[in-house]
Length: 564
Image 1 (cartoon, helix red, strand yellow):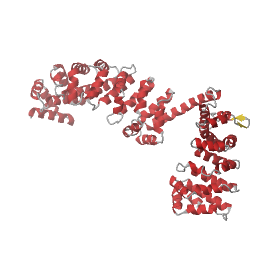
Image 2: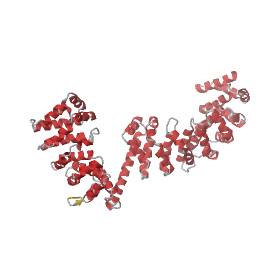
Image 3: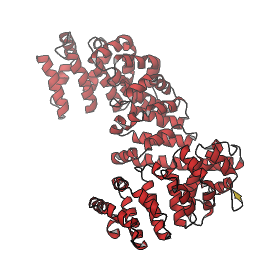
Image 4: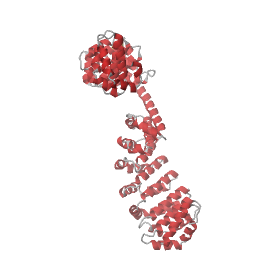
C-alpha cells in the first residue's frame, strides 16, 4: 500500500474510498499489532494525508488525530516519529481546525517532553506548534507549558530544519505578545542572549527564509517594547536588510513586467498568482523610489490586457493608488504611471468613470505643460482616450481645463508624437453632431486657423491625414460645416489634397467633400453648386477611374449625390 500511494493522488483517493483508513487506524491502535506494523500504518496514513484537502477531511472524519496522539505514548521512537510526521502533515493543512491540538490538556506537556527525543521529533513538534499557534490564547497555553525554555536551545541545533522550525515558533509566539517578547530578551542559549542569535540569523550568508523570519522576531520584540528601536542590532541590520529586500522586490517586479509585456497568457498567470495584485499595488507606496518605479512598470505591463483592465484592475481599484502616485512623484515614475493611466482611460475600462471623478482632467492638463516631451505625450494621449465617445460635459471640462491657448501651443509642439496625439484629441472632441456644432460655435475660429496652419506647414502624411479627418468631422456638423463652406482658402486646400499623389490624403479629403454634399441635409444643393463651380465634380469623375478601389468607390458614391 505504501509503495502504491507515494506521489499518486489517484491511488490515495481510491484507497480512501475503499475504506482503508478505518482499517489502518484499527491496526494502529491494536495492542496485539507489532511495533513495525503500527509504524507502517502511521507511514501510509501520513502519505494519504499528503494528498488533497479532501483526503485530509476523510482522515479527520475517521478521528485520526486522537488515534495518533495516543500513539505518542508508545516507548518506540520510530513509531512516535511516524505518528508525529503524520500529525505534522494533518495540522499544516488549511482544513484542520487548530483547536484539535488543545482539546486534551495532556497533549501539549507530552509534546514538550518529546522534544528531547530526536531531531525529527524536534522538527515535527515545532512545525505543529508554529501552525497551531493562532492568537493570544494559544500563545498563553504554549508559553505556560515552557515553550520558550524548551525550544530556545533548538536554535543552535546542527539540523537546519530544526533551527528553522524553532525560529518560526518564536515568530508566532512573539507576534503582538509583550509577555513573550519581554521573556525572550533575557533568554540565554549557550551563553548568548536570544536577540543576538536572531541577529546572527539575519546575516547575508543565511537562507532568505531564515533572514526574514529572524527579522520578524526582532520586529515583534521591537513593537512590544522589549528591544529599543534605536538599538544598534536593529537599526544597522534592518537598515542593511531593508536595502537588500528593496533590491529583491525591485528585481521581482522588473521580471514580472518583462514576462507580461507581450504575452496575454503569462499576464493572466501573474495576475492569478495568490496575493500578487495586492503586492504590486502595495509596491506603489514603497519608500524606495526604485521599488515604486518597478511596481508601476509591472502594472503598466499588465494593463496591456483588455480582460485584466475589465476585471482584476477594477477588483483591486488599481486607479486609486495610481492617482496618488501621479500627484507627487519624480519624472521617471510619472512617465510610466501616466502611460498606464492612458490604458485605464480606454473606453472599455470600468476605471474610466472613477478616474474622471477624482480630478484626472486637471492633472492630465498639467502634464501637457511639462518640459518633458514624454509627459506631454502621455498627458495629451490620456485626454484623447478620455474624450473618445465621451459625453458633452466631459469634452467641455477638457477644453476648459486645457484652454484653447494650450491646445494650440500643443498643435505647434516640436515633438511629432505630441502633435499627433493633440490632433487625435481634437478629432475625438469633434465627434457626434451636437458636440461638433457646440464646440465649433465657441472655438470654431481658432480651430479653423490651426487646421489651415497645419495643412500649409511642412508636415508628414500622417499629420496631414489626421488634420483632414478633423475637417471631415467638422463637415459632418449641422451648423459647423458652414465654417468650411465660407472659407475659400480651406476649400481650395481640400481640392488640392483630392488631387494629391498620396491615396491616404485623397481619401481623407474625399470624406470632407462627401459630408459637405450629402443630399439629405439642409442646404446641400447650394453647397453642391458651389463645389461644382470650383471644379470638384471634374476631380470626382477623374477619381472614379482610380486604380485604388477604395478611392474609386468613394468618388462614385459622391457623384451619386449630384445625380440624386
